[in-house]
Amino acid sequence: MRAAHYKGESNSGLDMNLGVVGDMEKLGIIDSFRVKAAALHSASEAAEMIMRVDEIIRAAPRKRERDPRH
Image (cartoon, one colour):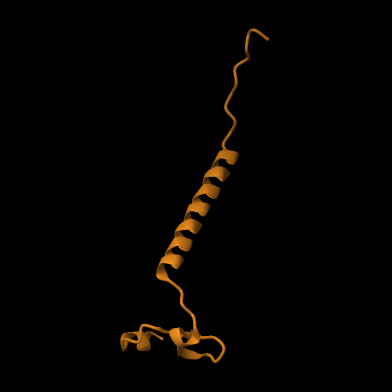
């Protein structure tokens, strides 16, 4: 596939049915780079949120002072 891209065949990709390099446009596979970039961005944001929540859960609870009114 790298050789095909190097030759300027930018529509080349892996035809998983035949196990060869094929023309993705002819196969009807149109996948935008922007979609892939957005998915990676969303995944990294989700991972960051999970790590933050995990850090909050692991943090030691703060000491609370007794309220003299109770």
